[in-house]
Image (tube, rainbow, N blue to C red; front, side):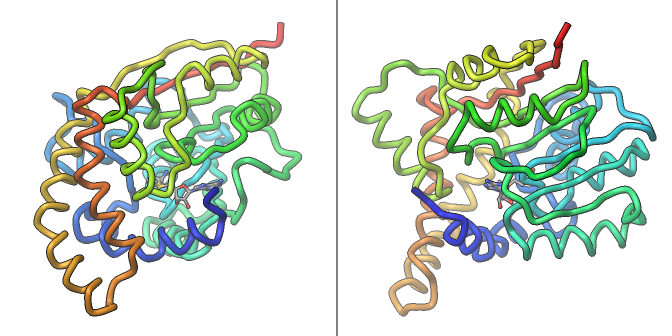
Length: 282
Ligand SMILES: C[S@@+](CC[C@H](N)C(=O)[O-])C[C@H]1O[C@@H](n2cnc3c(N)ncnc32)[C@H](O)[C@@H]1O
């Protein structure tokens, strides 16, 4: 199992790749974009993934939101600017949170967002929220039942949980499919892909009702092609620098995952879904 230290090392090392290929230093986001008629170019598609939260949850200045695995803070900053709502962004990566705090200040929303170094599987707070959301971070969840139950406890009545992430919905996989999944997961330090049934069954044990399940796999594909292309172009440099001891194995695996992620999508092993659950206790 990948521990917190290993994950932090991975994200600190790969931040350079994300900045280079993903423009993350400008928008502070690290996820596949939503390439639909609304998005105007690549950066816009990445931002659109965050903005679509507003189509599923109405936010205003009184709303209290928790973002899990906020990374460099781009999602919370964007949504805070658009709505004036109050956010808490949590992540286990202290360096990313420092960047997030600086970005929030630059964007003038530092009073609306608090960034905390916290594991989303064990959130210690007395606060309750109108919305909890995570984009491409729940995939790191180890205790699915315990974590979903905790999210439910932290939500107010009629509160909303949105998880937009990579999953698998295959019940059986061929040897090749398992091989591709394992290789892809290794590069992103994932234990394996979470099955959609596991999330849905965990939610059924709580007051969280499934309100919407949106398959966004087709719309993220242009981002997937971009990662693939970047990997093909940059991997030779990665292999060379690894050979002279200037690059860590982890970084080369990250590059190889750029290839595997597209293949797992093409094979139907990796799907991207946006889930919306609503808490109903009565
Ligand atoms: C692919 S990045 C996505 C960041 C952000 N959600 C975005 O859309 O730009 C995944 C993030 O999840 C964080 N993460 C992984 N496991 C976590 C955990 N158990 N608790 C909190 N954050 C976690 C990582 O540190 C990383 O910042």
